[in-house]
Image (cartoon, rainbow, N blue to C red):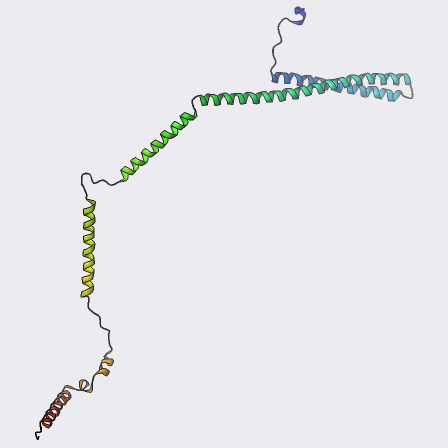
Length: 229
């Protein structure tokens, strides 16, 4: 029996190989369908040609057409079954590929998490925060001005600053007291209008007026003493 049917076991076909084989079978069945359909058309023409001339020939042609129709129906059913199987294999293959991809992704995540857990993450975050704080402290220390050995007394500096401020205020007060008082400017014409006629007269006239005033005062003095002029 092995001599006729082969002693080796059938190798497992991959989904791609199975689909290829089934599609080849579908192509063969389609050719068979076309051949049967052509023979059926010929038998129908024979029946039509002899329906009135030779009924026996026409009836035989219809019988052959019926047999061909049965074969065609079976082949069409087989082809439909194979096409359904192809679609099922393709869907199963897609599912298998999807499953394999998901499995690979899961294994990759497992490998990653073997080296990474929540405790390590928290420790790393704490270390990072510590290093950031250290860097900020270093930057702040570097940015502070250094006098390199010079010791400064803040209280003494503040006292000196207050003394300078007081000296500046004293200078401002002295300058304010010594500043001349600016008199308003009066027009010359207005000044002349405000002078008495004596001040507006010439020097000779002023001298004469002065002598007359002295004579008047002397006369009043004599009169008050009862002396005759």
